[in-house]
Amino acid sequence: MMTFAISLFAVTYLALLVFPKYRAYIALVSAGIFVVSGILPFGEVLGAVDWNVIMMIAGTMGIVSLFIESKMPALLADLIIEKMPNVKWAIIALALFAGIISAFIDNVATVLMVAPVAITISRKLKISPVNSIIAIAISSNLQGAATLVGDTTSILLGGHADMNFLDFFAYKGRPGMFWVVQAGAFVSLFALMFLFRKEKENISNVDRAVVKDYFPTVLLSGTVLLLILASLAPKDRMPPVVQDHVNGLICMTLLASGLAYDVLKNRSRKAVERVLLEIDYFTLLLLAGLFIVIAGITKAGVVEEISKLFVRVSGNDVFVIFSLIVWASVILSAFIDNIPYVATMLPVAGSIAAQLGMDPTLLYFGLLTGATLGGNLTPIGASANIAGLGILRKEGYEVKATHFMKISIPFTLAAVTTGYILIWLIWA
Image (cartoon, rainbow, N blue to C red):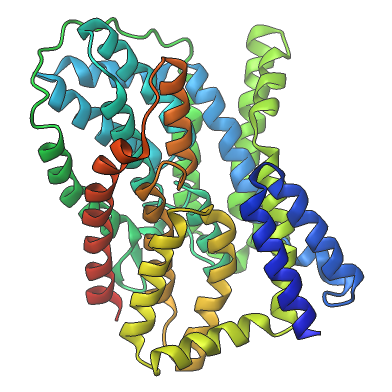
């Protein structure tokens, strides 16, 4: 049974890499085989899917869609640009702004919001927007690991380790991932300053975007606030169903409120249809399938065997295991999607920690750092990078991988190395 489970998982993962357009269907078919073959009992299927994670992602996607439509992000970017003396600082400011936004909003959505501002500035100055769009994309990837809602990988970690919103700021009495990411962002800032040192053109006035509606801004702020309050509320006083799904219920309820407000205000369902169409159901189906697949390989004992292999290779040395997880994640995430990778490796990291009798936080945070930031190394390593290059392609700019990596490699190595050192010092 274990041999069959390993073979099926290997074929599944290979298919996910070779056929990225069909990843959701591949994961669902594989999940079905795990159930039909008897590896995972049919009665455990619904329990294998983390519905809290699914609802959080779906709700956040919808709220972000309303927020983007309101033009508030574009206005904030315009206000920042007005204060910048030249192109170098404009690029850096936009990259930092994209990072801040990305700590609370999906990375791809952040790029779609901020990139048009960079395009507008470049047109007015008659310069190439390539470098600024690359900086915006990689900066948004970096900050995605800072909070619970910043990236799908963070939401996966939160679901697996039962971490709440505030745990990313302070966890078990120590600094959380937020501060590790900020330290990485600070160091990588110097890399950007060096890379763009020659961009000294002055910036002319930029027309400010006009905000259509402030309610989506209130909605997004309310989402963050309620997630914080939920982190502080005692779970034992909540109904059992709410305990396990509180974050997801918050996100979905606020999305429903936003859609209801829009219908009442405009007396039209067009916004509802648009938002519902913009939710990435493909990713939601992929995650649902992966949760079942991972439950299957866990049931078959594959996760435990992989963790034993890590322990044997490292000679029971925690530093070696930590280093392997961080840097292997960086390399692998540069070429493969980090969502299935992180979903697979979280239970492996937990099993390794259990075998060594240690707190798994060191390995969890190392995995998140390597897998999230490693995607910045290459143009295909992260969805935000692909989105950014797609915007440039529409503008008539074909970006070579070598050009992208001249910016991304120094930036990524600065951020990952900083996080690697800090996590070890704090959590070893």
